[in-house]
Length: 319
Image (cartoon, rainbow, N blue to C red; front, side, top):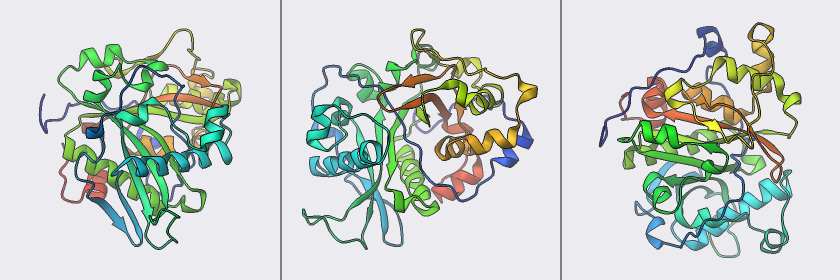
């Protein structure tokens, strides 16, 4: 399929009762989307920045979501990521990261960066309004041109990509929000920005890694098993963690799972993805640098519920 035609995906295997427990409510964005450090020979391409003239993608009160307009904007996003992941989080910084006080890697040069700025806050020393939330967006064409999606360092996406050759994928990553801005308003504004970007660029599928805090899968047995039994993607979408890094998610029998307790144990970001219609890949991956256990998120646009499209997209229509 091409253009604005969307693939018709099989629904995730989540029971109606479980979906009722996943209905919208106030949620905070506390989880990060993690990657393993992977540096193929990428080159900076200015055309990857400000692809749409950096118009406003949404606004709620003093908060506005838009794309980064230049290198300075990207550095502001990197400083926020450093503060959230390293200074306030559990990620382990190397000497170069500590010196720069920015979370950066080669992927930043080929991605678009979604920013939430606060127009009511005191400007920074550069005279710009502070960035309080961010998402990193990697377009299908850029990924293929420069060696692949960064998620491919953890999960084997080849089967999914090859079995859907007419679809365009968008990778979501490096999501974070400054602690005092982790409110329903900020989360909804980020999703409004993502949805606007998806519509404008006609993407068919969103993918990315989402994380649990901690590197002990036994301590995460309940939520991992819940995802395995109730949210695992059907075969055509079920990318598997690389064999050398594969961590079994099926750690408890289905009948032993307390679904309400499992939902409480899910990070807000993963819970939010499930509400919208995401599915989970096969196996988890331990990221020791970030101190997380990662799962793969697969979200065909056609699987997104109509009420969410109306909520985040306004004039958008369900596929």
